Length: 115
Image 1 (cartoon, rainbow, N blue to C red):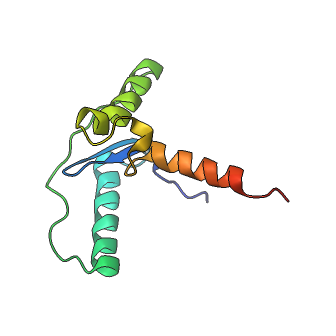
Image 2: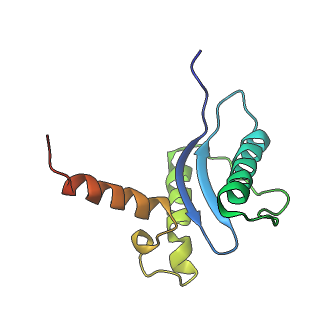
């Protein structure tokens, strides 16, 4: 049986909120996916960082992506969130987002010698 997974396409962690662009398996509700994400993060924050307080507020807001134009619009919104908040002048500079991490990974891969 193939394991069904949540796919995170884009994310940005802001000082007081998080944006995720994700695909949830067809047989999983969005509520269940968020329970996994929030619960998993809270567990690791407790175990690895010793943080015992509340991490998440109750609930979440969601937008359903219905077509390619909507996907691109929301992707750009997520990427531009740190710029709009004055935390970076370019989305690729904000180290708490998937764009930064992808670029860093790519740069690291290019710096490695080929075998």
